[in-house]
Image 1 (tube, helix red, strand yellow):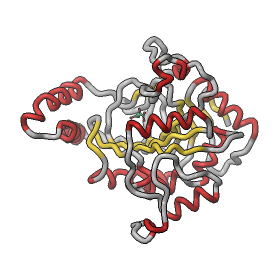
Image 2 (cartoon, rainbow, N blue to C red):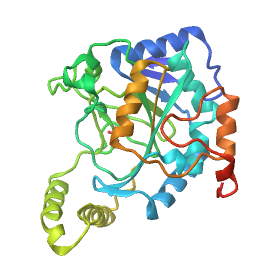
Image 3 (tube, rainbow, N blue to C red):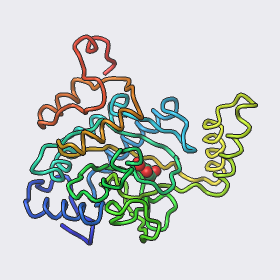
Image 4 (cartoon, protein in one colour):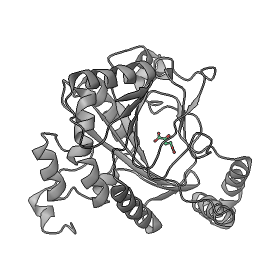
Length: 306
Ligand SMILES: O=C(O)CCC(=O)C(=O)O
């Protein structure tokens, strides 16, 4: 059921092929540039994912943006791959790309406690240079985001977006909106939309600049020092972890493929594989394996941990 502009109540057991609903979802995405789908994950799924992501990022991932970050996460965290290739999720994505198939780009990020200022996700695309990417209404590349904790309207942790900015490029004058969610809701947004996560504070900015200046002389990893400093500050302030999973997808068209090509240029090299179970889930749902990343082979099967 549509609650208000941009927001759908969509429990996992609701039929996913109601024609009017799918049309409304697509319409809201194309006019507002984002949509919230409520209660996609159960509390149990949220708990399992949060644990899997938090555990993985204790030793895995990169120190970045004041937190930790993992690219192409479907290839390294089985729990995440299983969830993102489940019927519950793929059926939502299919509603969005309907009547075309769903293409998973393979871009899939995990993050914990990272900061992020205003940006869109197509800065390097060649059609961003002349702005033509923002005027093409046939562009339909989206990111689905799961924040694994409640984020209310007044929280600093809440994703902020500038509704409709996907058709306008970076435009500071457009009003912003905090997209409040409960853990288990999904936010789907056009990758062209201007958005920001947890903005860096003045202390964050000063600490980052300081570490970038002194780290080389002290032979420190500036990003790691910045992340560790922030985690001490968070610990003192008893600020809970902010954990999220992101995945991009689109229909099988030229925009999705060119988005993938740009992604490959900036982030080449995927390590890990998809497990047989994940590949089976994809096959049963008639969705091809993600474009970025190596397909699973029988040679790898004997060496896989999954
Ligand atoms: O940290 C966040 O909430 C925002 C993440 C983000 O900007 C992105 O995935 O493009």
